[in-house]
Image (cartoon, rainbow, N blue to C red; front, side, top):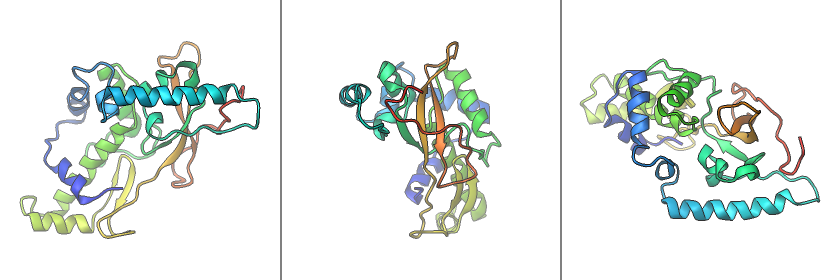
Length: 233
């Protein structure tokens, strides 16, 4: 969900041209940490390793299960490529939830960059697989600058606050509407079902991240059927 306190963070940042932003601001978060753990796991590398090890033990048991087919859905440890890659073959068919995906039909209202172009630009600039935080971060700039524009006087805090309270705009993650509730100054965003699948031979990355359901937003395309974790495909 978006709240005005989060948008305030976006308003303090400078905005460069779309490609410059993708090539400078995003990689800067990962400089000095090639694994990306500090970016994807705010608790730090030690906690991240503990979480991965616990998940690895769970998945080994499920992979060997001969009983009913089960879906293994992981929240925190299933969001980013590095977490799944750390699991090796156990990462195949781990399900998760996604708040932004390269296949989202929405683009940045501020820069005009589509979700696919944002993901492609990141991969080209950083040399790593895209991750869902890209669109979420971009959406803060979309909504933040839309509020500044709607205020008529960006330097007037009261005017900006009033503009935020009635803000309706489209961002990389989808529509943002602060008038829609469920509480004042809050706009729910869509979470869709996803699953990590072992990539085909010759693919650039080890896993594909596919959308498996779109109940919260039917405009988002579904790419595959959700598979049981111990299925042979």
